[in-house]
Image (cartoon, rainbow, N blue to C red; front, side, top):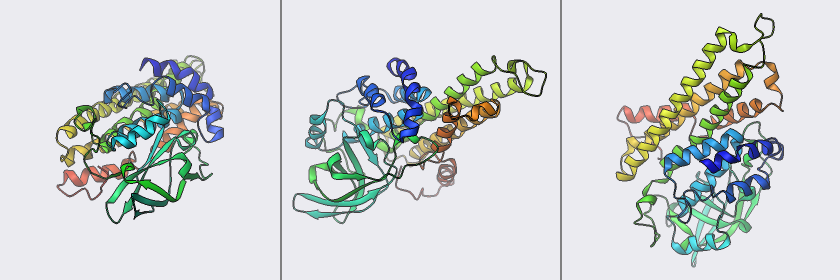
Length: 369
């Protein structure tokens, strides 16, 4: 957490450049790799507690939401890799001590069985961090193993230039395509299959199911964006007045007091949901069949994100027209939280319906738990 916090000023300096480039700068990626944050959940890395991982991403998001998100993708993907055959892991770690791996969860394309493995073709959207990724974990379907994750090296995919967005622009979440790439069997892991690692299968640290781990870790980015907005608001209200009123200092106005209270309390509420999700992942690790607990992780992540968006909107409403400038850090934070709020795993409406279904005794009806 201390190393992540120390990077905030450097990431903030590069955030606008990443916004314009549509991907992270090389320097930002080098910073998170050198700080050991990419490997924070990896076998040879820090093996950080999940709660610490959430706080790491929160700190990074105070400087750059896109860097926080991509770092989370890289770290969580290495955690997923820990369930693959040791031969596949050896391949990845032989390329770098701090490899960067992305993951695309929505199954696409088809993996045709061939001698020794599969022939993979397809297109995957929203592949965050692909510009600096060494490997990709791509979900597809094979007639022999069903839905599975296929591990492919960078040389096997082509990137599209289709990431022109307002928020989280620096994540570089463009589509990638694979055409007739050979994937050997040791680089394939069927969805829901037990760990195939002889070295890590019995390690309790790697017993956390991936989807609960991912959605819980993802809460760190909206928390950091909400915190960044509140920190900016606290600084602004002592330096500016309220136009067309008698208030020379915004901090003196009752409306500011109410806004400050609402933003602070909602950020505290969001942190509660993050901490409960972390505790719930421990329950799911002990009982992987607890569907209600898995769903609650998604519900907590969605509520936390919704609350953080409300924090940022409260700050934006109280910050005046000057905060609309693209050069103002708050404009970037506002765009990032709006983009994050519609991510499928964090979208409140989808996850509220899912949670409500399960609370009503119905089957969740979705596989991504």
